[in-house]
Length: 195
Length: 195
DNA sequence: AATCGACTATTCGGTTCCGAATACTATAGC
DNA sequence: GCTATAGTATTCGGAACCGAATAGTCGATT
Image (tube, rainbow over the protein chains, first blue to last red):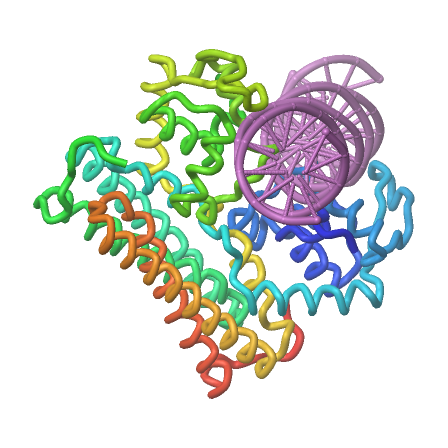
């Protein structure tokens, strides 16, 4: 198990999670993930998926469970989880939850670090717009959650990651709005040239 | 300006931000970022830095401001921001703040989505440990923040990204602890096999 | 003055990432 | 039965990423 491998990315976890249910071919994994809305949680591109599958294969976490043309669709390969894969899944999952990553949400923090460069009014404006977009996103997630839980009677646990996302979006929105307000009111002084 | 370029990663923003102050060579950027503690906000490896600089050069956002050996140190190249670079910096910064990325914090959400697979007690345990680690991290950030603000009289605005990080860590910790408690108490039912 | 370790500065090579391209199948409309 | 269009399934090539390797310099020690 190399230090850094494609088999360690979030997508790899998702792939193993799917194979826990039943053997699948990559394309089916992709559509299933999309169906369940997990594709927006992390990046999901076709190329990466096939690379990830290859890496999992290399590490013996999954195995070829039959290549061939089923019906007369284009040829495809079905993969199944191995026993070591099953253990690896649980271990990785446990570790991901147990220890927070150092560089979680790096895009926004890197920008925030330089927000002073925009000037107080521009910065406050941008933050306010972000707050609006966050609210929209939350709204979308919330309605998706409600309908999933309502109509299909899906247990809450299976949408728990949406609850997490909603909680974090709300927290970010609070901070963004509070900071915009501080910038506008002058409570957060905006010194000329420093650093 | 290609669709996806190394010149669009968080590091590129940081590089431009530094060159806003004065021309620098890559190694100096690296040590400056480390000094300021920005290296933990996003990944920072030597290879990536030089690649990023090359990409910025290619896009004319920075220019070679003198190659050569200063004193008799190993040869090095100093880079300076161009005018288009200056604009690009502001625009990118504005955009990063204005529109939230779809895949912010993907590592943890992808894990949370499968937390049911751990079983209630194991999941609660892992979450609790995460909470502890988050608290430690917050403590480290807080003390770094206090000392920076205290001793050097640095304006708050220049450590604002740490305040953001602290806010988000606190929010995550809340959710993690609440969820662990729900799992333990049975308030979050843990059905057998589904999905 | 030769050796060592710490610091300065960059290149290298392999893996990962990812959108575009490919190619094949099925259904519909004419 | 021919073409168009939508859906299925995977490969490809090139860019980005990143740790390890390289290589030169400085000061201290023997």
